[in-house]
Image: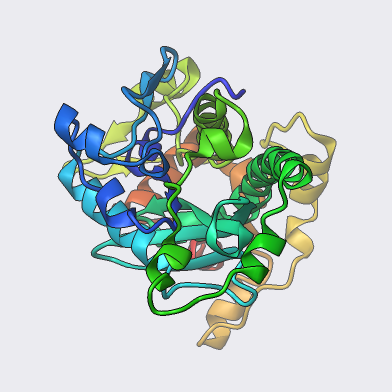
Length: 350
């Protein structure tokens, strides 16, 4: 598993909903003993829940049957109902995206699990990923869908083994095909006398909810680690602090940035390429000026070619200081005697 988790995943939620007839009751956030007795096994999942702590990232992952937060409960309840009723993809089985800014955005992966006692010999489930950030959820789609498929295939494989064993022992399909339906036994035939079974019984795995907790935990951790935020600037180095202390401030509050001369004899460069560029400055063609006398006077004036050339002329520390003021929007005043040089300097900054 990944070493760290993005803090933003505290607002993300996983939910597993089932298409049992008691879906509404299974979503009521009540933990009283009386309500627990009234529920069937198909409406129950974890009893107290599971908790995993990530001490390094300071994040706790909690798996419970119902969310304790009323707002999260409302969003997940609506998403569960929509995922198993109106929001379906072609073929009924597969991922689909829906939602809005108020109730959150949902990635719903609907699938079926074989069950000999269910109507139609299978039971529909859906795994939901609920987020308020639409763009983040859509960008996570290529990662979430394949890993959710792995979890779903594991559940279907376990349930298929139980289904095959029960069918070999007592086939249910021939009995249902031969059963006659009349007004007197319509309700019994439709609903059956057997209550809905839990996911543990359908898959034959008593630790299925522990497995789901660990699987969802890893998916959240890995999905959060794959996208990281980068700062535009880091803490200043020791050399940068020393250079900033040497800067002079004018009476108007501006900071002077001293550049090295562009003359080839006075410019000191350690890079051979930079020396070659400086020697060829006098051979460059200067842009046309408004007046002929200015054009003749400044024909061989040095100019700044591009941003890399500017960095070599200013030096690393001065260039970083200049870039800092440009990014944050401070006013920059450029003064000098060579008009073509100043014009090229401003054009490079644009």
